[in-house]
Image 1 (cartoon, rainbow, N blue to C red):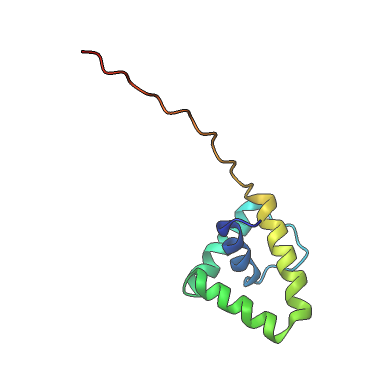
Image 2 (cartoon, rainbow, N blue to C red; image 1 turned 90 degrees about the vertical axis):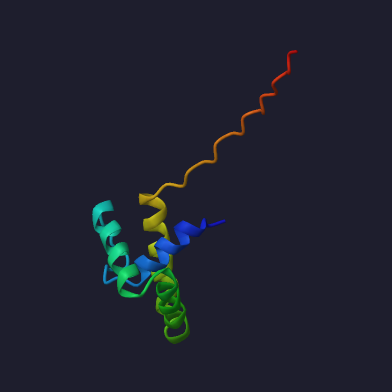
Length: 94
């Protein structure tokens, strides 16, 4: 399952001018995502543009999203959840 932050980054990257199939460096992708989020009025604006592209050109949108998602997953590895610590119980001493 794709994490929410990973999906948001992939949607933003999808809306950029970077070429599908390219393997840009982290710095390039990170800046492109920031610019896209600002240009589209936030993450929801990026998602709306992605949805519109799927409606208008699904044959192009699918490979582009696969590319965007693979780039984001490569450059932004998912954090593993921390193992839960057992609760420490304190004994009341009178």
